[in-house]
Image (cartoon, rainbow over all chains, first blue to last red; front, side, top):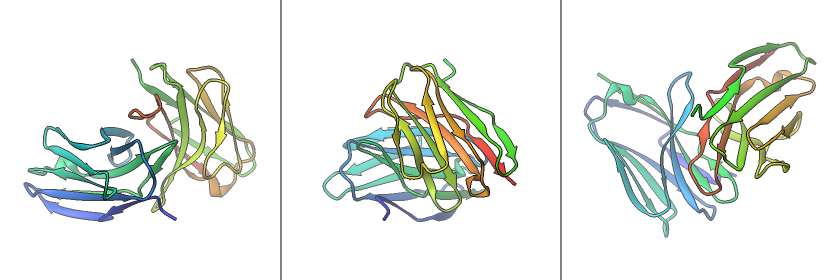
Length: 106
Length: 111
């Protein structure tokens, strides 16, 4: 069983496009995390949120607690945004989605 | 602050060999974790430690042991490596209910 489901699994976009990655979870959580992993690289935390919306530069994360759903949006996408984006729900431990592989083409 | 430091970055082992992956954090976090990442399966929890002196099994603990040596350090040991343990391993730490910080990963190949 997957406590956290992400979609799409793979995404290719043209530079400048608006991108949305979705995450649904089935467990009770205290927070929802969005992580970024570049090819061959480490994992960095982009957002941690428990309600509402957060924005950092061109990235926006939203969460709807009632619907158990979160979205990560990237505005004006750029090739350097190409990475795997991972959703993680935290209660007593982290539950990870399998990631969305994003490729932004110049 | 170095954050989470994980060593080694790469390792090749022969089946049956043993090794220890080291992890240290300098953020005074209580919780530390070991994950493995395999293609198409995402990150899976091997073991975690909620505080110094305590460790608990995660989703895939078989074939591994851990030691929480002190608040800073959390090591992962493979006593007898198997090809199924070929993976990328990540250490992470956080305060409970806060964002997690990850090490750079260890790419382990067991031949």
